[in-house]
Image (cartoon, rainbow, N blue to C red; front, side):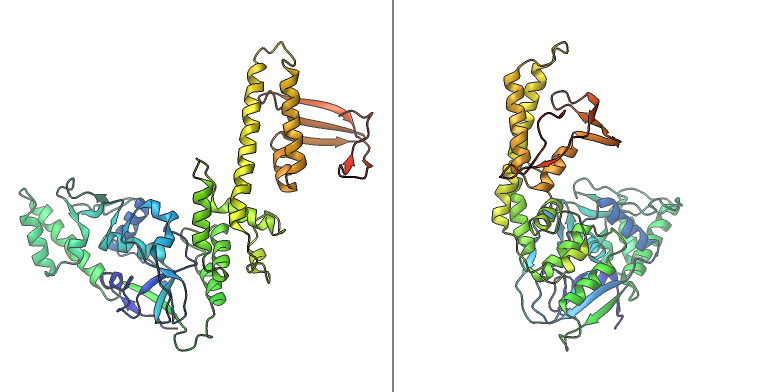
Length: 426
């Protein structure tokens, strides 16, 4: 395994650039960029403090692997529109980033682009003593119109064609005011530090997994495993990230279909997530809703396809039914505002109970169990008695405990299934 080194200033030239050893790209299995502005600031601060920022892991391949660009002018809305940045598949040499996306994307934004329309600036007079967890060198994303000395556009320092001394003298001359001796020394020292940390050929190290000459040396399944293990640190992969990585390795357009599905589900104000959809898919494939990565490693599971076009209306219909129930419940609560009345409107109560019965009879078992658990708080069995603690649906702020005989269970045929015989308390 090769371990090349490169300067930080040069490595950003590899991103999205096929002329630089095939270019660095993000494979389909990579999740969205998730770092905040604060995390980006801390990366650049760490570099100027000369702290190690870790090793990248790169897969060199000629395989027709779906990949996307890194984003220079980044906006948070792009997290849900990754398919906008995919490039055509080909069999040319390319370098796919398995570990280091957050760092490379942050460097690309800071040195070549912007974040929410604002560019990265450095307070050239910062850099005083700080506590271990505090920022030493102050960075901020600013509009050019609001940036004032001592804040300087960072990319202009990094990519300056001058030597450090000349670059520092130019900054001092254009400061807009007379700088003190200490301030001039600080400007010179910090410009020199930027040149040292971003121009040094020891700036960043990356390991290469190379299958360009032998495509069978590392298969895509091998790389998915490497990806999961390599991303166990930093901003940790959630279980849905891992499951989606496994899914994407055998379903080329999983990301695009997921985007379209979530857009369809949430167009009326809902907030369904990828986690919810993946759990629903596991349930529909009869593997239960519990998150277990091993489920997607079982033979044949990743090759099964859930009809997402069918899934969307089913989820939407369930949400609408629950909203209707909530509306009926709210009406009932309003009619019971006089606490001296045990039951105000039997017709409303009967309608509400009927809706509950229909929901419980028609919904799949996982949905019924989840709904019942929402108002049953505790069940305690002692001998032939059971203490049931529950929230009364009509009055959600009160609970009631009752001791009842444990009912005998009789088995009755027909569509009704198992029923409790009449004559027992309910």
